[in-house]
Length: 135
Image 1 (cartoon, rainbow, N blue to C red):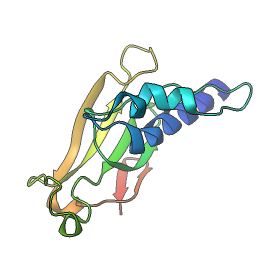
Image 2 (image 1 turned 90 degrees about the horizontal axis):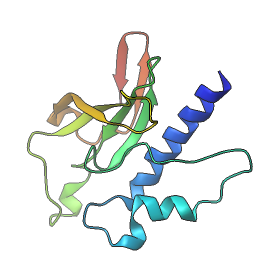
Image 3 (image 1 turned 30 degrees about the vertical axis):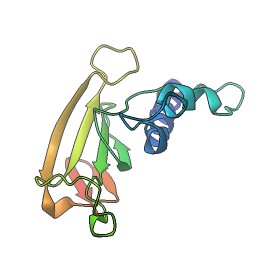
Image 4 (image 1 turned 45 degrees about the vertical axis):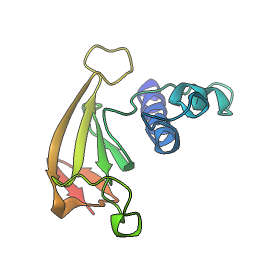
């Protein structure tokens, strides 16, 4: 149980880490790998990279289900009216599911659970039984 919790904490930290450092065109000093090296980690804990762009972009919230899959809210279209030079996804923002299918603690499978303009700028996700709550 503890190893599962530790692994899930690592996934959460890794996903949150990508918020500021995983732009595809980011300079090397802002890469996910470099950012991992800059973290101060409490003795006995380990932080590893689970996923980064291009599997998802601009994550705002995550949840982990009972199967260990990581659900990610994207807010690609967040406040575009204030940043007119930013690109827009006309199809709308997405809810992604990332999964480690080979047991190496890295996401190797991603799929779109839902995409639409009605979830643009979703800032929260919660998994309750077989329900997904997006806010």
